[in-house]
Image 1 (tube, rainbow, N blue to C red):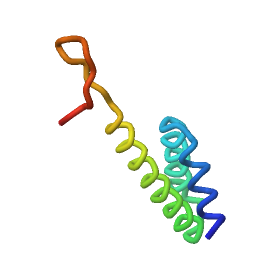
Image 2 (tube, rainbow, N blue to C red):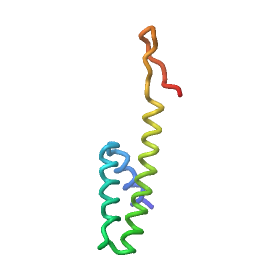
Image 3 (cartoon, one colour):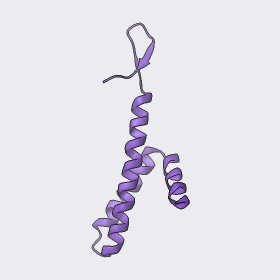
Image 4 (spheres, one colour):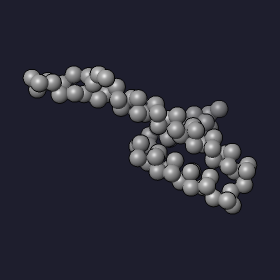
Amino acid sequence: MAKKENCEQLQEEKSLEEMFAELDLLAEKLENRDTSLEDSFILYRQGMELLKLCSGKLDTVEKKMLQLNEDGTFSEFSR
């Protein structure tokens, strides 16, 4: 279990751009006909875990976004 937590911690330290680039690489490997079925399952699971981390990071960023009010002050972004 500690190995999974360490992996997630390392992924959370990466930028969204780095994680999206990693997702692109995983997708390329999945599209490769030489990738075995077993490897495809592993790559798919890695991609889904990475996608979940990206989603969480995007939610965090969205919550931190500020919007500039007409009077020049900032307030939290609202939908």
